[in-house]
Amino acid sequence: MVGEFFRNINKNKVMLFMVLPGALWFLFFSYLPMLGTIIAFKEYRFSRDGFWASIVNSKWVGWDNFKFLFSTNDAYIITRNTLLYNVVFIFVGLALSVLLAIVLSEITNKRLSKIYQTGMFLPYFLSWVIVGYFTFSFLSADRGLLNGVFESLGIQPIQWYAESKYWPFILVLVYLWKAVGYNSVVYLASIMGIDRSLYEAAMIDGASKMQQIRAITLPLLRPIITIMTLLAIGKIFYADFGLFYQIPRDSGTLYGVTNVIDTYVYRGLKSTGEIGMSAAAGLYQSVVGFVLVMTSNYIVRKFDKDNALF
Amino acid sequence: MNISFNLIAGIFAILCVFPFLFVVIISLTDESALANNGYRLIPEKWSFAGYQYVFDMGDSLLRSYGVTIFVTVVGTIISLLFMAFYAYAVSRKSFKYRNFFSFFAFFTMLFNGGLVPTYIIVTQLLGLKDTIWALILPLAVNAFYIMILRTFYSTSVPDAIIESGKIDGAGEFRIFLKLVLPLSLPGLATIGLFSTLGYWNDWFNALLYIDSPNLVPLQSMLMRIETSMQFIMQNASNSSISMEALRSMPQDTSRMAMVVLATLPIIFAYPFFQRYFIQGLTVGAVKE
Image 1 (cartoon, rainbow over the protein chains, first blue to last red):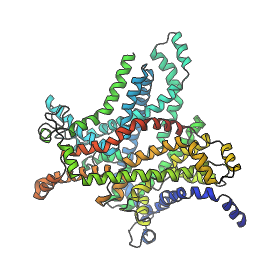
Image 2: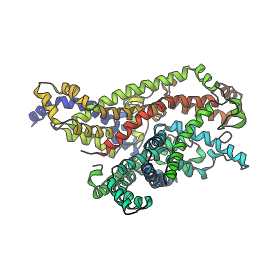
Image 3: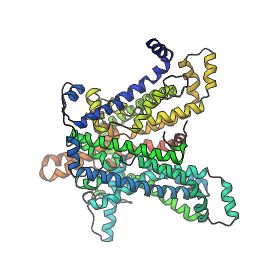
Image 4: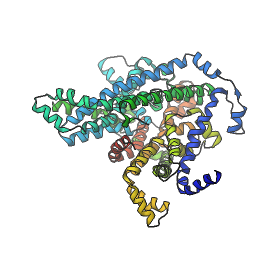
């Protein structure tokens, strides 16, 4: 047995050597953190003697961190915000991406279509920090473009970064601005894959553009739409940290509508120092996220085996 | 019909590019015109003073550029090496443990420890806090990219080629370098561009792990300027020291000039990136 094991190791040693750096990376950056989730069940204290000593010396507190987390209003607010924003992103984003893909596919001048696509792709390549500056150039209270326009129209300027009621709209707009152009390419690619003769036949039958879109394009896009949506639902418990941290400029008065699980965990770790509760929120996110990914993948597999993640 | 389609797509494309152009305009506005009129599409007075200021204070910007370039180049090389080897090994049917290592990578896409344990392990166990490696290593490997690469190898490198290499007496490494690598170049280029962009745009790892001003990358420096400006502004009324500090901070135009300078390399490279990204999107959709 043992001898055979070593013979196998020896026979595969080159391949094992090849996976070694990556495997070590996964061990340190993925699997040890998974073990580290026990911090959520401890009252974590940093120890000078390093990681292992900190873990061992911290006191077990059982489910206390979770009890504290869920007894505050925070758990409700961050869960609500994360879910609601993602739901809006998924459905509005989907509608706009598909619409744009159809529009792009119908443009007869291919050079113009390429130019539009290049423009729409730009936001995807910029970091959230840069997008934060862009947003600021519009929303700055004393210098921003919007308040400037308001002033010339005789409307009272708005302190954008202090009034939370506008932020759900601002965040959705910024998200759509950054993501829609990129996402529409996926749908455009599958529209391009549709058999042209279907449209020719429809045209001979006298179908208008709208009728063609309704009767051919949309039904044929349905499988890919279903799959993309289900996969997005699997990730509904994760928010884009950059969007919710950079765009509102970490403004405390806006936390009620901008705090999501990811920003809450970050702040618990770095600014408020509530490591135990922050770890508990992180574990809550990972576990629910895992269940959602497994469920949505199970459903995707029922629809279409080829597109499932596993 | 066609006109309205062109209009919709054209307007959306312009909206996508507009904020960037607007920031370019602000960076070219005269500071006193900004103070009087705020950010305007057509400034009262143009000026290069913002850029002048940035190049005069040069040092910290140059250093941040240096950090970002170093991290991007070294990071991309490391992640390509790690992932190309890993993906190749798990794509080979002769590798006895391929299923185990595939799953080992894949499972990390389903479940993760979250931010807090990761932070504690990186700082306390690996001791990477305030080192350049904290900007490089956390982004080095990505299970999803490994899956894409594995698919790429198994579809574009036929077993027969590897067999022929073996018959000619080449070792596994030689086969990889001389036969597999040239064939898989398009796949590697796609993943390489993905990671280049990831490293260039990263600020999150700097936010978590970097305190030393010498190691602050470009994106993160832009963030820090903004935060300290806000801090000074909020406390400007009750202290004379902060007024002093405010004067030494870069002005509005020069901050926008920095934004433009940090974005410029991407603006020039992205039409090229775009092609590979579309390829990557389609490659990623194909499974083994």
